[in-house]
Structures are given as C-alpha cells and as structure tokens.
Length: 162
Image (tube, rainbow, N blue to C red; front, top):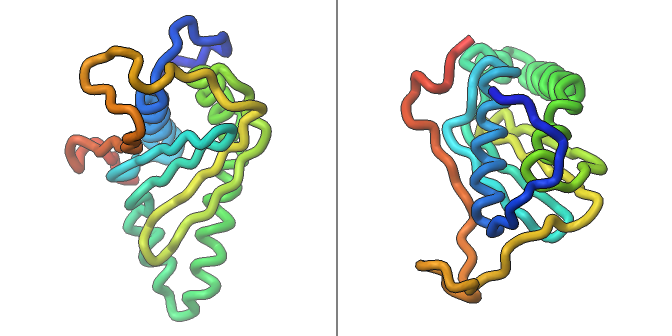
C-alpha cells in the first residue's frame, strides 16, 4: 500500500470519487492491518462527517468467540480488542483520510456488531472537503441524485483469513 503523503489533493474530485477512494483505502487498511478485509465497504461523505460501513469483518475465530457459553463476555472481549487495534492504527487511518480528502481528521468513533459482522466508523473532519459540484457537465452527472460509493471485494481470496 502506498503511504499517504499528507498533501492537499491537486484535483477537485466529485463526492462519489472521494467516497469510492475512501472505501478502497479502508479495505486495504483492514487487509494489511487487521489481517483480512471486509466483503464490502460503503462510504458516505456528509459535510464534515465521513461514515464508513464495513460488512463481514469478523474472522471465523471472532464469530466463535461471540458465541461462547458466556456470549456477553465474548462480545465484550471482541469489541475491546477491535477497539484497541483501531486506536493503535489511528495515525495511519488519519493519514489515509487526510491524503484522500485534504482535510484533517478531528475524531474517530467506531462500533462493531458481533451479530452481523458489520463495523461502522465515523470520522469527524475539521471541515467539509472541497468537492466538485454536481452537474458539472460530466457524462452521467445527474443533479439531485446521490448514490453512495460501494466497493466489494472481488473474491473471497482477497479477504486473507488469519
């Protein structure tokens, strides 16, 4: 993975281009840092908030941990471990977001569902990133219509099991 450069992007991109690039970058981060990537990532840029939804992020061992005889304890351990991993990788995540959006990340909030295997990450940005306005003459641009960027893993081998 290329390391983020921490410089302002020179090209103003559309909201969907930024969202797609963020989804791909978060999948790469998950694969390289956590050992496997989600099946799907979808990003939503909402002013100075960036919401990333990751589907099927749990490893088979984590699924088993959430199902142990004391499932509340298993879920707690799983959530705490994942929280610590994200906190440890936070500088890298901040750099990725800055590299793509050109805006500094102020805070990060996350939670993971041990039932669905989904993780939600919310980044609070210091300001809304500069985006190319809708209907700028590009083919396929439709004012008023917004479809969030979704990126799926190409195959199960891309997930790299632990």
